[in-house]
Length: 337
Image (cartoon, rainbow, N blue to C red; front, side):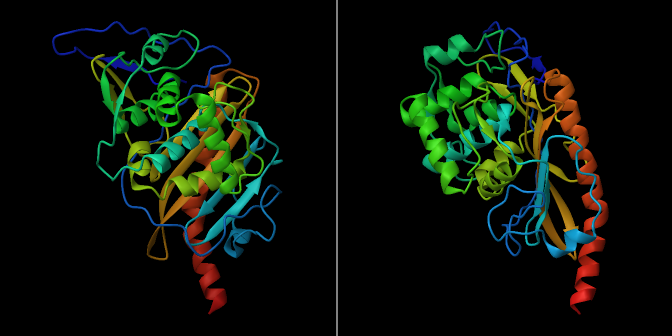
């Protein structure tokens, strides 16, 4: 489901922008946004149950006393900073991930071109190709103007909030010279993170040959959330395209509820609905970051139906975790005592 743009007047000029039409193969996504503190992962490992995780990894002991409403289809994986894995469900077989791909795109950009929190980053000049692709009727885009200077931060926001595929490709060309070279960086980064079941073939998620698992995407999300600039970008509630007079607002239905502060969703007919989410939860007096991944919900249906299913599956997990995790932690503490 693409973010619905709200058109506002431009100062002194107007740019015609056509709302993109979502076709079945489009990797359309929306972003969960929010603000607030974060703690680095520590303590338990990123673990799984039901396959797909690395050797020697296991579910955090307290998770065994929790009854989580795992999705009945697709894949899911959840971990809590300082505690460890709450489990992984579903066959960890690589599946298309649609615009969840852009989490890796943003992560690689920020590794290559680091930004401080609240900083605009480098200056990027939009090329003609990115401008021409702004008006595609077959994919989700964000309007950019050829020859106009944009900040790195604004382009990352335009890539993540309305999921501008054209902006993802522009950033890849800016960073690596061409998209093929950038995709190679994505795959090297995935290998370095231990994402053994992941293959990237493009930077936007349009390609159904880009495939991954919930366990692998959880590894990536945990790494990405260590970057303060990344956390701010995925917490952006709305973004205006400079010079175009178009504001894109976040349409993630989980945003602002149950501590949700991110992260990225994507949907297409082959991929179904996909959501990488992050929420905060008080556990034994500490503010913990909980990250979860839900993939391949209602694959083969419409992007709207798949996206709705991913939201509902994630909402159920988040609600149960927030209700049960503090009590489970207390039980585990009493057992250790």
